Image (cartoon, rainbow, N blue to C red; front, side, top):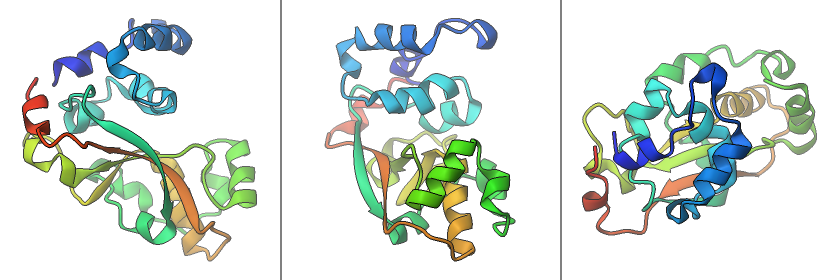
Length: 188
């Protein structure tokens, strides 16, 4: 695990974890993380920091040098992303009605109206990091879903049921433009 990942850890344990608003004030006071969108902290790093799959697969990255860009992807692009093994089983049974699997009622309405998710999921450009990944990380490219498995499953269900799906979808993509990323990620 990279030392930078440890700096991103919320204070406290599950039941007594520092509130997200306090966490963000603390993180934003560290200018090394200004480039990471708040939405990425809110939906992924803050709630899943201690998750063993998150730590194993992405805790070795040096987040000072990653780029996290909001992009618009086509439906075809999204169909090609990899789901790591722990969550792959949740993508069976795609004939379920959307209302039975949406996490929130507001999500169901959003899907029906917009044909896409309300909050962009997070995807990693695996090819940018493969040479540096530890053997314990499950990275399969070219792109892998990091966070947003329920949203992605909803997307696949809509596709499978031939329901309305928008032609493009917002996503956050973790990448780097640092050609020397290999020297940056060795903090684990």
